[in-house]
Length: 210
Length: 210
DNA sequence: TCATTCTTGTTAAAATTATAACATATCAAT
DNA sequence: ATTGATATGTTATAATTTTAACAAGAATGA
Image (cartoon, rainbow over all chains, first blue to last red; front, side):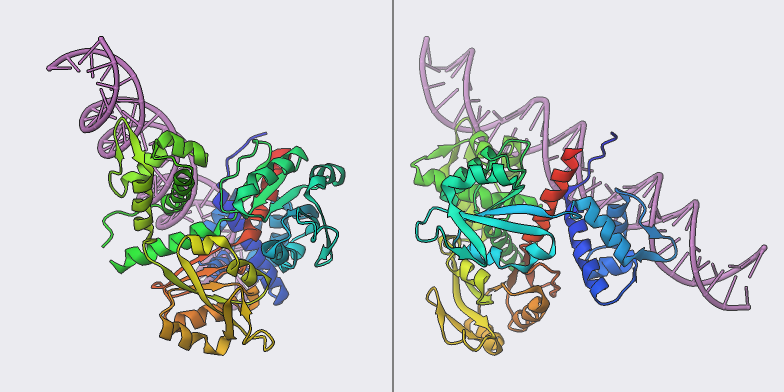
């Protein structure tokens, strides 16, 4: 029951450690040090060890970490030992890009259905995934117990989409629309807002010029 | 010649404030308080004022902020008072989604060219933007003085793309490939890594279940 | 003019996160 | 067995970032 608060940045890095460990394993590497992990992520060895220390002891002193074991442990921490059912809202360009994106499958995420309101899209499939009428979204999510909803529509209607997902009792939402989305506290939500990063870039370019 | 170190989170929020102010202005709102801005972003008024205080005094005590003026000031801080020349690497689904994304144009970013290595794509246009051979990338960036390079190709070749952009003396890179990219310090770089946020979501869902 | 109300800008305190230092454990060689 | 080299796990320190409190400026109305 002891609850230590773990920085979100640590979780973000764990996800990246896991990806790095995948690469190492694919290259036949069996042992890795915090030093090497840090190098692979442009981070520091101390931080790697600190991040892992929140969750236990996974290495061997004087030796390092077993690549495969550590990756398994991290995946367990992140909840990636089982599949996740995801649905997508928005059958546009971005939605299509996401359906065809390798990263979902390789990490255990299955996009089971797409929802849109364009009549000419409904009934079609995109990358093998069926497109349904958004009117069926709430029922579908409830019936299929989909856990993750992905919003890939313009910001004007993103909050509506989120509301529907919440109504269907979704567990988590990944929002790609560049806008603020509000959901009740029991629903996890993160936004992937590339416009904001673009402007971080321009700020830095402008600032460093001076 | 930076007098003070400003948190990146502050820059991120400034970008979001600006977007919020755009919306207000479009709705005819002329005055806004830090309280209202905070509400619009699920933040706190103190943080809004603190963020702005890094850069100057933009409001009137007892009154609030002039929506249009504040937005102009923020845009100036972020370097958005002039256009930015961007090029895109990758004419796939994601690249297509980005070219057609409203957010670029509305914030002053112009994607001038796309680069790919697929012969059947080279010579075509996507959303009115010409697709060139990636072999021409370095020359193009130098000649046109493109400032921002957007990487939208699979991770296996993302670092190569970054290297070419750097070679062309790009100022900033926005990387959409789910991998670590290394660039020299004079080049600004940010990654938009949705896979990582996906796993933050699963971590939180798993953790809150217990 | 003066008092009241409102909201900013600023300063101080608290909380969080990252960095560094070090003690401990393991392995290998002698 | 002992020593030396190595790399982890942990603790302490430093840096950063957020939160809160409050003083000060501006508008309004008596």
